[in-house]
Amino acid sequence: MLKLLFAITTILFTISPSTHGFDPLDPCGEMIIKWDLLHSSPGHHTCPNLQLEIEEVNSNVCFSILSQVLVKIENKQEYRHVEKPGWKLSWHWVNKTVIWDMRGAETTEQGNCSAFASSETLPHCCLRRPTIVDLLPGAPFNMQVSNCCRGGVLTSMSQDRINHVSAFHMTIGNFPDDPGEFTMPCDFDIGVPGYTCSNATSVDPSKYSTDKGRRKTQALATWEAECVYSQTKSSQSPKCCVSLSAFYYQNIVPCPTCSCGCSSSNCVKPGVVPSLLEQKHDPHVEVSPVVQCTNHMCPIHIHWHVKVNYKKYWRVKITATNLNTMRNYSDWNLVVLHPNLNNVTQVFSFNYKPMTPLHKSINDTGMFWGLKFYNDVLLQAGELGNVQTEILLGKDIGNFTFKNGWAFPRRILFNGDECVMPSPDDYPRLPNSASSSSGVSSFVSFVFCFLLLLV
Image (cartoon, rainbow, N blue to C red; front, side):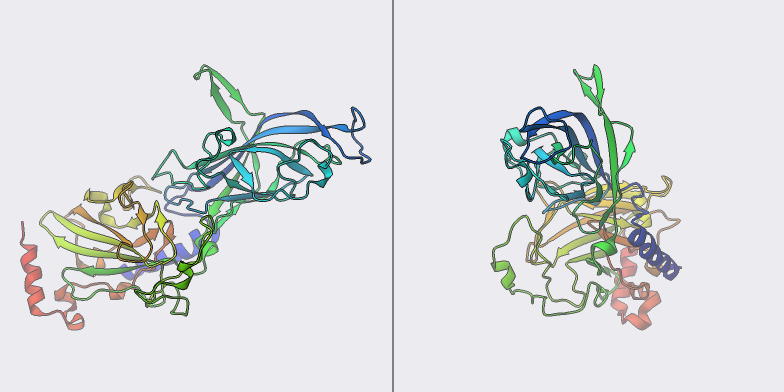
């Protein structure tokens, strides 16, 4: 039965979340890019000496449509978040559109604005495909808008419902030879590995409260584009693996060999500082992982240990170790599937939230994450590069058993990415059912039986 469950889980992971971007653990999870057209009216700017087929006020001033737009990026995922270097939003303008002014964000390049050479001021960006980044914390106050200036970092819904939204404001217009009206751009890209975005579709206009909620105003028009995540699009190889152990089993079941790749010249031996770490890096650009040399070659190693058995409870220890010498994982999280998570009595040093993604009657999924300012950052490889907790779970006598690997998780995800589990055939076995193959001594069997009698 355990082999069948493992096979079904593998098939679901391979087909649904990876290929189609659908996550059965977070069926409504997605990133939303929302455009609110707040104002649109004719404006004017100084034109160069061009033959323009537009209405001229005088020889140097011509009309164009100036639009005020508010753009929001909302992370509606329960456990996936955006870490540094943050999102980098881009799109393709359908018309010859320019960005005259921005607040709360900025484009990475201005582009060729020579068509506006005679204007008093040049546009902020004239690229046909601009790339926008969030302002950093501490940006000048007159450049800020609400929900800006966090360096593109977005938290997940479960971890933080306040900082899961970014926003910026734009004033946009047209090139002198294209006086057309505002047209929604296409071909959106959030700039985070693994995400694919749809084109924007028209939705009901957003509404805003003013005068302390006494009055409602609304946008002239609103569009939304949806971005979904695929682990295989993010990386061709997994990013984490799981090992198992138990008090009644003398061996540790390691991560499967080559879980995240096989040994190569890119790995670092324990205790050795990679030369890349000694070089200066742009703090706003993600550096490729350089992992410690192991049989599994994963940046993240999760260990599940069945620690103690009581009469009414049993105790588990979870350890997450960072083997990536180039990165700290901020606001990390673990999602675990286990049938006994429906009766979690106490979690000692992590935050915990039960999840019921598909059926509220099934409570076998939970999310763990660090305590703020204590262990919410998983440091890079080294003595301090791990976080751990213990969980006390109540027993349901009708379901609880140590047989056939029941005490071990069905799935574990780190930061939203599936971790490679050991084969069910390798799971720790009870002494009386695995003595012939596991080499468990009679002394260990005696200790196990004694612990079962503890109150």
